[in-house]
Length: 205
Image 1 (cartoon, rainbow, N blue to C red):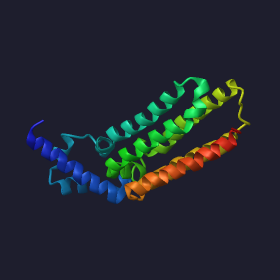
Image 2: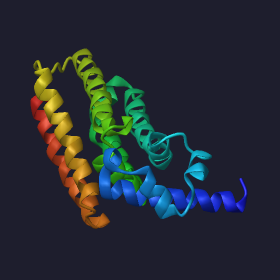
Image 3: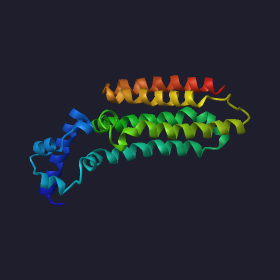
Image 4: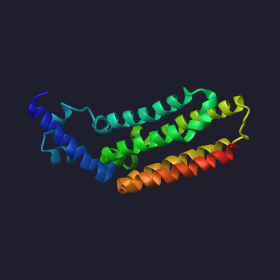
């Protein structure tokens, strides 16, 4: 890609970021994006086929990396010998959530797009996707506890879904409100302690 093409793409991305942050994906206007970028509609379509593909270009890399961090932490925990999993329950998830928070702060506008302005795109399902992964991980851990002779009382699946969704909504509140990073990390630590203690109680551990 030539220097001129790179500059044109940067102008389109900057204009699109501003438009999407101001108006959300559904209300954003390609006409406004093209105008703000100072390029022709024809030039725009030389890079992207639609508003959807432009939004994807702005957030896809960070979305995939973020979900990847979360999946890797789940896989790392599940690979620990069963008898040692209870000991490492909070440690691995805590390290992962801190890493995810730092990454989100490094790409703050992208994550504000995903969390607040992505309705109408596949990216609006970030929390739902994370909840689904966490539910599977929770069920796997409950199976481990049973094998260890420490079975959990039955957990209502609707309550489980509500609690896990609430945990991730709480986590993303830190990003949405752009709290100072050190304060956000402190709040995250407190939040983890709160939810870990709650889950231990529910699981009868």
